[in-house]
Amino acid sequence: MNPEDDRFSAWLDDELGPAERLAVEQELAANPKRAAEVEDLASVRSLLRNAALIEPRDGALDRIVSSVAADPGLAPVISLASRRRVPLIAAMAASFAIIASVVGGLGGSSTLPAVGRLIAQHEAAASVSHHDPITATDMPTLGDTMALMHTEADHGVVHALYATDEGDMVSVFRQDGHLDAEALSDDMHGMGSTSDMGGHAMWSADVDGSHVAVLDGDGYVWTVVTSTNTEMSMDVMADLPGRSESVADRLAAVAESIVEPFELFGS
Amino acid sequence: MYSVAFRLSGNHSDAEDVLQEALVRVKRGLESYTPGSLHGWLARIVTNVFLDETRRRGRRPQVQLPDDPDRVIAGSPGADEALAMEQLPDHLQTALAGLPDEFRAAVVLCDVAGLTYGEISDHLGVPVGTVRSRVHRGRMRLREVLR
Image (cartoon, rainbow over all chains, first blue to last red; front, side, top):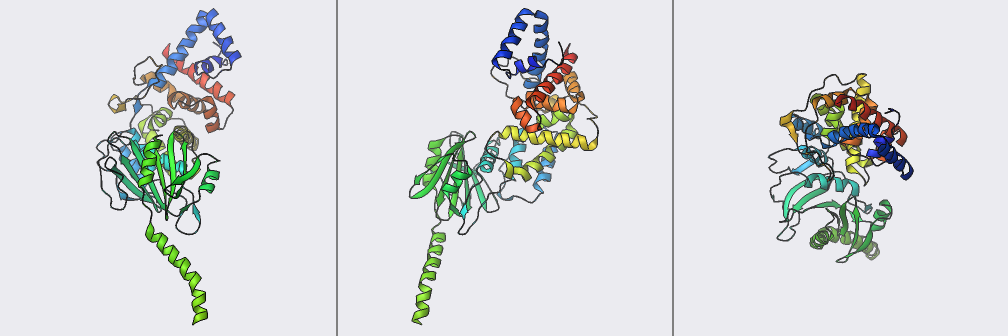
């Protein structure tokens, strides 16, 4: 086989157009020697694709994660619970656990959750093999069937991972601010839809294989990420609390700014 | 990520260094991640770290160790894959480590990370035709060790 004739690998990878594919298949049917050579290529391909995943050596993963974690980043609220074994995927999970960072903040400006990053953080946390239920007083209780498994915070964004009895995972992210659903839709290139959830603006969409819903909750912006389980996401959304204190504070500030001039005239 | 790093580097020591640097880049570069192929994005970062490191060192991987059978875990083969999961034969891993960096990167991204030619083209910044050529020529060289 001519090493320059790369049609045969492309054929194995289903990367040919119809005309080239037909030509290759006709050649293979007519030329047993060529067919045997392509079979050799297929064997190489299969060996590589079926090779087992490889883990770092003992202790290496802890060293790597510690080194990466030493970079300024996550301030854990509660660390991962009872990680008895650290499989390969945990390396990814740990890497994302120290990554969380979301645009936004308290104040008059709108807040746009970094949806892509939150999805990645959810996937990483949900993929850790072993979680044990934990308690965290500052995160909402989501019914009787949703156990809080993990929580952490970074730059004002709190991430809580819940699991159902069936093992379905849902992430709830909380950050200060007010959702600008229209700006978020623009930021996501028009993806998703805006609706009303109990009087609060909500944006939701299926993104990258996950269902994402973002809710404006009286001073909090909540982002819920599940693995395309829309019904569970909506149930969670209905349970999320607002922050009435923050709203009251803002109303008081507004009221004061209105009343103050009249008080000046009256004094 | 570690499997890609190991297949590129050919040994645990270099693969661990590549993984560590890749995770740092992931941490610092998460701002640039947009919804899409998370898997491909991570594979690209690992590959870029590897290529940067080999360019910096000005050398090819020097040590090729066989897979450690005690350190492997099951992968997830496609439904049409007839072969059972198994570790890569030592001579094939050695041959893989001996490929020119560009060929090895293309083969690993295609056959270990499972990316399409288009995705590899985007990640490596080379035309699809170049990816196609590198994958084929890399496999042709690996084929020699199986004969």
